[in-house]
Amino acid sequence: MKQVIIIRSDIKMGKGKACSQVAHGSLHAYKIALKKFPEKVHQWEKEGEKKIILKADENELLRIYEESLSLNLPVALIRDAGLTQVEPGTITALAIGPYDEDILDKLTGHLKLY
Amino acid sequence: MKQVIIIRSDIKMGKGKACSQVAHGSLHAYKIALKKFPEKVHQWEKEGEKKIILKADENELLRIYEESLSLNLPVALIRDAGLTQVEPGTITALAIGPYDEDILDKLTGHLKLY
Image (cartoon, rainbow over all chains, first blue to last red; front, side, top):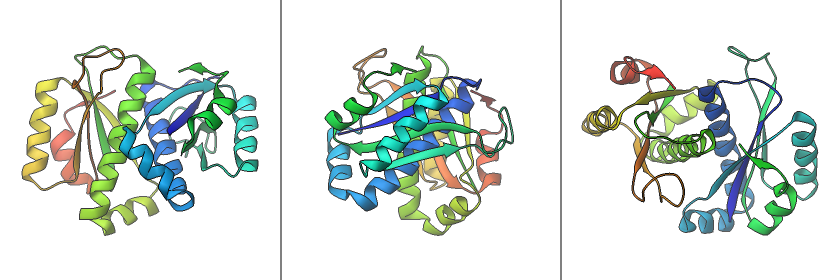
């Protein structure tokens, strides 16, 4: 099991901002996964809570979001309140899982590490 | 309410690594807070889940950790498995809260943003 968090590569965010968006995504996807697939979440916790941070532009991020939804994966699209650095409502990150590594690799294996 | 995540400033981590440590901390402190102070967590969620990312060296991070424990705050000290970039067991981050902003400001208000 792993959790993948994709940060938007086509907008400028400072590293603290980026980290906070990753944390938002991680927590939201975790909560969704815990409701939908608690046994997968517990297995992920036992295995050490692997988290992978990737990057993609908005189009690619939205494409992966739609595909994740169609596969019924636990997925969280993160929009920022926009008080600093970005416009209100800006999409900043996408988090998927915890879920099976092979499924997530098929969806995100082509992306670069953040 | 807010959650504060402090990343270690005196070791070198790439930005993806740093983000994953922040996410580990955020999730662990959230789980602890949910058990100890569920009403504070729910208030934080209603208010938009404010997360602040700060930095400190290891000594200062450990000092804040001890003080947080003595105040019975929900706190998570993050050590890395050390498969990449750092030695196994290296302390990488500290997360506190969600908890009352004024208490967290007293503890961490002197730290710089990451």
